[in-house]
Image (cartoon, rainbow, N blue to C red; front, side, top):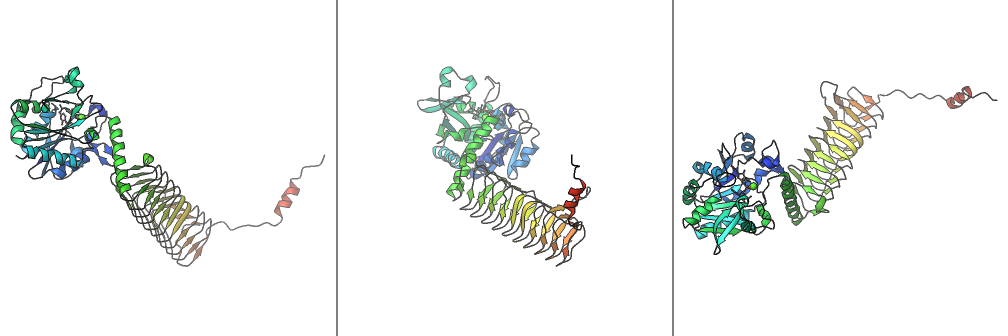
Length: 459
Ligand code: UD1
Ligand code: CA
């Protein structure tokens, strides 16, 4: 909206997280916590200011471009925090957000700002009616109008019974905010400058205070500790699954499915129970994701099937390919159209060409496999000599017999055959047969001779 500044308060110490990492960088459904406040702020404001504590380089880096940072050197309270942002704010409405409230919706915030402008209020507070208001600031009204906010720890027993709470999201008229903020004192239980006191100061001076109540109190849930982090994550995940189902994805068991906000799935894709999909991951249409699969930062075309228990990271898988059950794609794999990677196959930094198969019990690393190749059961690329990694290339249409060791660096030409059980150490030209194993020895009648020799004497 025109001329709106959003200020995100994110300098708190977050002691209750008991973490070495800043609270706002804890991951939540695939994004750092701060990303949610930034997304809502950017949607509403021309200008986004973030108040951070000292040593917040990681927070600044995670926030990215288009944000003005101000540092709150000493954590003297929410009022003091907002005061630090003054020089970075415009003269239009100032929207204050907390960095730790990821469930706030864009619509609710838009409604708050719209109401603030329509009523020409000095301040508009987003409130919520909470089942358990403990810990939150309470809204004190007189004749229906908001008079002030009292913090839980400063509240009387009667005030503690009030269910209407302060979400800590506000819209202020800039001209009235700054003088009122200058009047805030630290005469409270924590000895801090409370932003909440601005409401009482403005009301006392005859300013118009408006309140908008969030339609769903979950929007007010803040994350102060790891239990709340998990509880909010569960709500966010459910929203993600609802969105996917509305878009035509079948989620067989939402309760056991973990899909991050960064994942997209095409229509008619089916996700079986106990699946984890994370990072920037996309599936096309009509894919199947089997039970127990765990996929990170990968891209899948259409009609790809993951049979149960596929562990996949940073892979690209083209249309119609089939993976698993129990396959492991480590980072850097590219699986071509209609290719197949089967049970107990571990692949790393390898390309498998169109229609090729690595169906059973193999290790394939640093390898380029052409089209229509069959890699037999138990094949191992020996890509590491104890010092360095080496590459293997297998040409189109080649056939690698079962239980072969391919010692890299190695090139197997197009259409070549490798005899089962071979250890191949030298390049194989196109169309050739290579066999590298001990020649078979056959001794006729050996069993009978052995029996005779060892026959125990009769008694
Ligand atoms: C605050 C409100 C309370 C409201 C609750 C909603 C005050 C005094 N109280 O309490 O009425 O019900 O939010 O969740 O505002 N921060 C700073 N610098 C500071 C202190 C805090 O940047 O010196 C930031 C925090 O990082 C956080 C936000 O301000 O993002 C709120 O601070 P927090 O300490 O969590 O306030 P609450 O006690 O939850
Ligand atoms: Ca809080």
